[in-house]
Image (tube, rainbow over all chains, first blue to last red):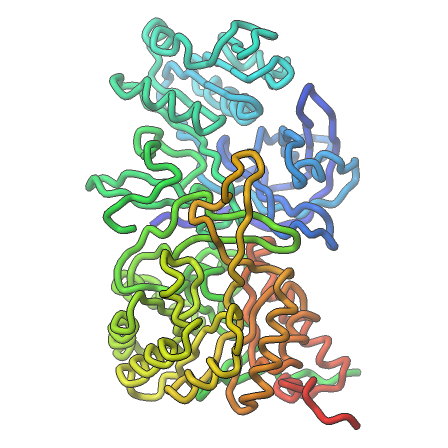
Length: 282
Length: 312
């Protein structure tokens, strides 16, 4: 049975900077040595709202990237969409604010030992952790192509420095306000065939992850996806973030996306059963 | 200078060096929390209620945050008693943690079957009989809402388990007359009571305009229900002053824990607070020690039910 990320620690850290980028906030935290154990795909659980808050649960955010910075020591970057009350609170925090975090949590994207052709697919702010992943893959000699999609152009997150770590970047928006009109799954099979893709790494809404898995079902392409399921604790004790995942013997288990995920093999997730209960053991 | 406070407590014939416990269903089987503090520093780990067979639980969404609280609808997902006894209990005992095993069943017979399996297990401190999980398909199956069904479950467990393993009955606050349910299970053989389980609630999603949780209803926990817990503990302690109570419901600070103890709790479980802060139990325990010392208590046990004392 999977266990909590052995490197996870709880600490109070300082917010170094908070910049608005399009629809998102880029938040930099001074986290110290813990950056050494953060891997692309891992997430952080953050206490929100301050001591007298009516918000009692942590919020989980994908770690966008980490750096060992000469000026600040280890820094962790998050790309946050101010959607709900918790993320709005985090986005309202100023430089110098003290933030209670637990990191790194969850599984990481598997990094190949040999140079491969990788396709990274991000939906909305789901693209954030993919740029850190692109760096790592690039350093391993992989060819890295990227597809990003969102409903509108302002929700595409693609920083200039990030673009340097990919061989190609293609953008889709549903309203056509940036890049091509449509979704990332539009010509996916053609792209995968033309570019001899070995592995797809994806992060974004569950419907996108499910659609990619379905398209890849008849191919040999491995699909590693970072799932999104609402969590109360992030550390494996509340059992709210479960997903139906197929075991080797064909049975299905409800696995915690905070412990057995967020990165999972897309072909193992029973997307058809998300929001349902496998019948045999209901 | 204040003298150190003796923090030990008892539940039936089980002794614990410290008065803070995990709450069943809020710590899994302890492995994850062990990364944040040594499990032997608290009174005991109360494990997630286990049933006789493996169980998937309810569909997602299983959670909704509410003001100062949350609704959950897990539905007793778990590995089943055999896997639990083979894997989780030995691991906890290896950590030198004290263990209270929580059991849940769909029938009176299932509880007895679970009790039979626990009989031969050495090293556990007590059994919590969870007769009040709100997340079952049929509300008629919430034994703790029915005085007669509650008694029959506890009677079956008492007769099967034999020996002197303390039985703690976990009750629901969603009843009209809690003291009478409490008296019934004590008469049937419960050595202690766990008060309170979550309060049945619902959240409606105003976008889908349907109940938000996959299971429609869920159990409300967190600071929002603390006054309900204090009231329940106070009422039951007044009616049954000799019966030890493991108190729980919205405790996030040492002050909250002290309130439950003053109302009549012999020990305090921390549940939802651990979701927001996995070190909460240890922090609460330390704060409680300071608060007791500041009020001149030499032992935690002197504070149990202190709110019931006669006017001077």
